[in-house]
Each structure stands twice: as structure tokens, then as C-alpha cells.
Image (cartoon, rainbow, N blue to C red; front, side, top):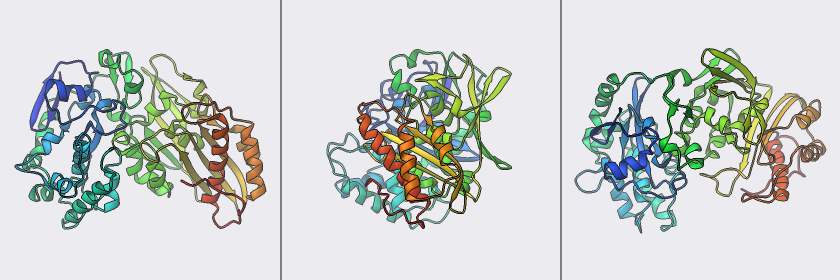
Amino acid sequence: MIRFLLNQKEINTALPPGMLLLDFIRYRENLKGTKIGCREGDCGACTVLIGEIKEGKLFYAGATSCLMALGNAAGKHIVTVEGLNIDGLNAVQQAFADEGATQCGFCTPGFIVSLGGFCMSDNTPSYEKGIDSVNGNICRCTGYKSIERAVARINNLLSQRAAGSALQFAVDNNIIPGYFLNAEEDLRRLRAAIPEPATAVGNKVLGGGTDLYVQQHDTMPYEQIHFLFDRNELKGIRKEGKTGEIGAAATVTDIADSPVFKDFFPGLANYIRLISSTPIRNMATVGGNFTNASPIGDLTIFFLALDAQLTLMNGSDTRTIPLKSFYKGYKILDKQPGEIITKISFTLPGKEQLFNFEKVSKRTCLDIASVNTAILLTTEGHIISKANISAGGVGPIPLFLLKSSEWLTGKPVTTDIVEQLIQMIQSEISPISDARGTATYKRLLLAQLIKAHFISLFPHIALQQLTKLPA
């Protein structure tokens, strides 16, 4: 049985755990406010809030229910737009009405749910955070300015609350209904009655599902699934000496919120904004991104430059391999049947090291890359003593540019060296023309992104001839 809370109702269901949460909500519970849009996580019309207890406290985060397995809802509080209703319009709904922020209304529930989740966060509110909270939602009618005004209106309301009182303030100001004040107690009671998940349930391994349900939409609901997303031993981000360790089921949001990553990657917030959208980041796991083996996987490219190591487990057997040797060909992995990634480890950048990640996609948010790249440089003055360069979208696998990295080692940072590096890289890549651009365009794009690395990392050095494509 799968047990969870759906708005104010406790759910106990024996339906297939691979069934999509979206379909359960709409067709089994008849909650039609959660819309069916793209079924690929691109539009946000199906957004729900996921409440779960982490580190002893209840947190809510948005998720796209069109990519979430019913089994991953176990032990959580699922909130649809109906679960945010009060007598009359709630404050978020009223702000949308007053600012004319809805026309056809199809996308509106997703925006209301996402912004409602923003109101329930104890983080210090700001207009920018409010806008970021709805970045996974697309509206084709309003032109967004009216939505932005509604967000500003809600942020002004939130600016009046005291620190650490998000839920109580939201209830008192008609943002959410009063039952939320009892949600943590109800969820703890439910979770206490749910046994720990079995080590294995099926042959199909599932983390967050944000890629697998897109690729295998017709078959996944009927698979016997080995769920990894909620396994505690696969969670967490830790610093062990000079090493960073990440559980394979950690999400992109976990990385964004991690004190370890914030301390060692000053540009982290900018990098994370380039990776999908808030609801997808709340679900997508690091191990899933690696195993999916997309040639343009953002996290894969990020960690290739860090020379990350993977720990794989099959029963009691474990082994560790470099991420850069994990990919043997297009979607071909150095992974045996039954093996799963359990941990990712990498050396944390020191003071003498510089890191940068760049990506270009058709949309800034909520899109896959045309080309992406990361770089880690160890410097001694203006001399590069070690270089790691990775690139995606320019070959059949995520590439660690070994020859170019070795060539750059020992070189000074000058305009001529960067131009020579770009020529070296051109000999190491083999892009193809596809929906994201021609092969020629991708070669040019990677060249520009390599320049962007050096412009970002060495702003104090005269690199006048290097130009970066406009965003």
C-alpha cells in the first residue's frame, strides 16, 4: 500500500507505484485543477506542492506531478490547488485577479501553487525569490507583466511577517487554509505507521523520474520499480576533509541549498539558475543525471570538470570509478546490471583554484542545453598549473577534454593562449546537427563559452579581444 496525505485527506492505495501522480490526482481523486499540459515537465500546469519532514522540520516544495511516480509520494503531503482554497479567494488568487494575471486560466493553478509554496517558506522573502519560485510555469496569454505585478504584491505582504513564522503568517493572512497548522503533526503520525522501504522492489531503478518518464512515458506506469529517491543512505551532502561527498539521491535543490557548495562555489546561484526550473530541480537527482547519460547533462558536465569519482554498489559489492570513464559510447555505461550509483565524491576547490560553468539553451530557464561546459583551473600567479575542461552537446557522450586540458597545463593566461586553446578543443569535439543547432553553430558556441570562462575567471587580466555572445 502507498500511504500519503492529499490536501486534507489520507490516501491508502494499492494502485501501481509507477502510476503518475498527475493521473492519480485527476482521474482517481477527481481534482481537475491540476492540469495536463506537456507531460514532460516543461509547462508547470501540473505543479503540486510536496510537503516532507527534513531534519526535523516540515518543508514544502513545488514539483511537476506529470513526472512524479505515485510511489515517490509515499509518506509525503501532496497539495493541489484545491488544497489552497479558503472561503473566497486566497491572497495569492486575489492578487492574480486584481492584477489581471490570468486570461484563459489554464496555467493559473500552477502559478498559484508555486507562489503559495513561496509564501510557506521561512526564507527571507524578496521579489527576486518570488519570481524564481514560478520559473517552472509558462503562460501563453498574459505576457507575464501582470503576473510579475501579482508576485510583487504578494512579496509586499510577506515583508510584514516576522522571521520563522511563515505558516502561521500565511494562515493569518488568508494565503493558505488553517489545516496547514496541523499538517506536520498529521504527517509525522502517518510516517510513523509506514515501514522503511525494502532494499529492492523491482528491476527498473527510479530516482526523481524527471528524464525517465519523458523517455519511457508509456511503459513506466506498469514497471516493477526499485525506488531510490527517499532512501536515507543515498541522501546528504557532506564535507570530509578536503573531499565533498554527495548521496546519489541528492537533488539539484539540495546542491543549491548546501552550505558545502555555497562555501566552495561562489558562483553557485548563477550556475543553478541555468539548470532546468525550480520544480524539476526539486525532483532531479545527481545519480539520475549521470545514469541518464545525456551528452548535455548539466550536472554531468559540472562534475566532470571536478574529476568526480562514482561509487557503485551491487548488493554488498562496491567499486569506485572516475566519472570521466563512466561513459563508453552513446548511452553505454561502465555499469553492470544491478549496479546503482550510491555516492559521488570530488576534491573541493582550494583557494588557488577557479571554477566556472556556462550553458546556452533556447530558453534561459526550463530548457536543456544546446552546449554546456565547465572548467576548473589551478593557478600559480598567471600560470595555469592544472586544467580540467568538460563540454556537452559536442559529442556522443559528455566529454572530458583530456588533450585540451593537458595542453593548457603550464600555459599563461593570455588572449593568444585562449585562442589556441579553442583551436585545440575544435579537434577534440564532434558535434552533430540536430534540433538544438547545427554542428557549425555548436562549434562556434563552445568557442564563445570557453572565452566566457576566461572572461569570468580573469576579469582583471587584459583579454580585450575575447568577446562573449549576448545572453
